[in-house]
Image 1 (cartoon, rainbow, N blue to C red):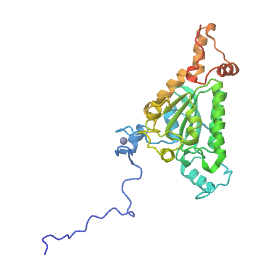
Image 2 (image 1 turned 90 degrees about the horizontal axis):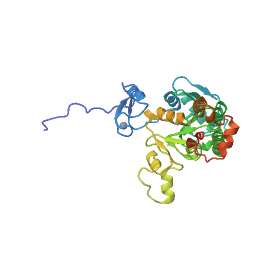
Image 3 (image 1 turned 60 degrees about the horizontal axis):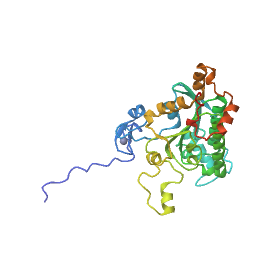
Image 4 (image 1 turned 30 degrees about the vertical axis):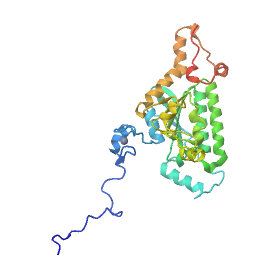
Length: 324
Ligand SMILES: [Zn+2]
């Protein structure tokens, strides 16, 4: 006979039916260091882990809140995909769209707005990854193109924050055409001598990287963001070679000259504002005009366009010529 008997029942594992007393989403576990973070603390650090500085993804609305000084004006909020190909994969694209619109409260994967960044009026497009992987379909292409044209019309600088899996396969070749359309609009922006800052966040891949995300006058990436065209797994299988450590991450791309800066999200707004102050023609032009007629620079867009055509496309350096 045993001296000790197990009279008590073992501790029951938490059954799935029993609701947890901790409210949903109050704590977030950092995917990098495993630290459990109170979500209000996370909001104050712009979704950056306070322990290891891992950058958790943030939505488009939050991004605009982070960038703009105060209120902003949103445009083209009612543009919605018409499902031109009547595409069906595991389920009809129409159903997928309706479900995503209901869950995100957005009509497509980008928000375009104008507002002030450290006092500088700017046209901003921010992509939303939770909307079908931030994929670029006809609506995203059209909205971003309009944001660029708004910048040209209003003589505003442009900032695009990318967070995307690439072109939207449910819209086939029509999504691929957006790459050319946006790039064309960006060329017009360049000819109008207006600066474009591209912000690449985790992840920026596929057709978005292959078009506008890499076309910034200054390309800024967030730390450790995945940035590439095809994913590392696909490349590894294709070339049958082991890829180097940190391949397709921001720091790797910076080392290899693909991007200009890697900036912590908490310093991103200040960094963008610094670039805009340096590159914005308006305040500079006023400052130059104040110094006297000898420093006058071409004012009309046509004159600037001619000057821009004659020069290489590196716009941060393409400031008005210094006085002789
Ligand atoms: Zn962490």
